[in-house]
Image (cartoon, rainbow, N blue to C red; front, top):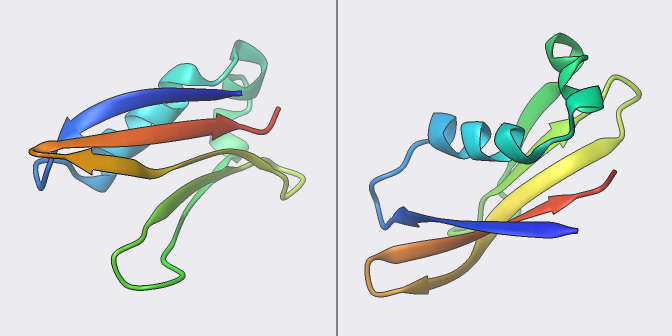
Length: 81
């Protein structure tokens, strides 16, 4: 399942992205928020993927840029749960 949100190009920071991801997670995941890990993967230059990893090291959600149009950045959030 995926959700989308937008940010202004060059006007966002990592904390903004984490807040957006956490806002779509179900309550049962948020109950263990203190046990979640947040990681950023950059497999190649210009690409950034934000991962939320559960206490069993399973990826619960991820977010990455899906497209950029003019000054808007469209992000897709994928929930693995």
